[in-house]
Image (cartoon, rainbow, N blue to C red; front, side, top):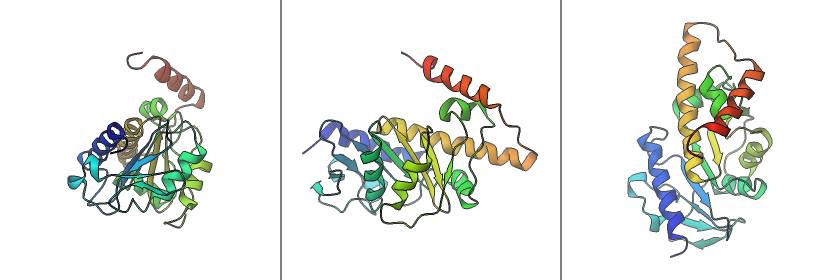
Length: 215
């Protein structure tokens, strides 16, 4: 079996999505890229998260050719592959339709930088890209074009994509997107949002990147 360790990680990260209530039924997926081979491990299409095992995951190359799989890979595979081909620093991609974040996507609205958590994790507003047809490479192209320096993006009328240096980092970003989206939604019910000044957003983000966690 190819890439057993990456299969294990991607399987574990997929199971985080329903645990954190970021997906329902079989929607959503996590993938991971092996930097040495370039192969991508991704959730199979339409399989329950409860039924996922490392062995059941699909492995494809960057052109979408199946390298090792008994099941058809996710229908979102073309999106993931565009991101991996065009963003060399990315080795993890997540797609969800988490409720609060996707509610912003439904109105084509970025999530503004009105919380220190947004400044820290995302370095600015979480952008919202345009509507794209599902099923081909348009979504991946929109992610690459509009995500900027953020690890997360909303796509109008669709949902959330996050990226990271690993599947775990991309899943963390997906969890954080939903968390801040909920808080911003609740704040909008209370009154006018108060944006954090751009220079303070950048200062907070630099501090978070440089000093947060164990180095």
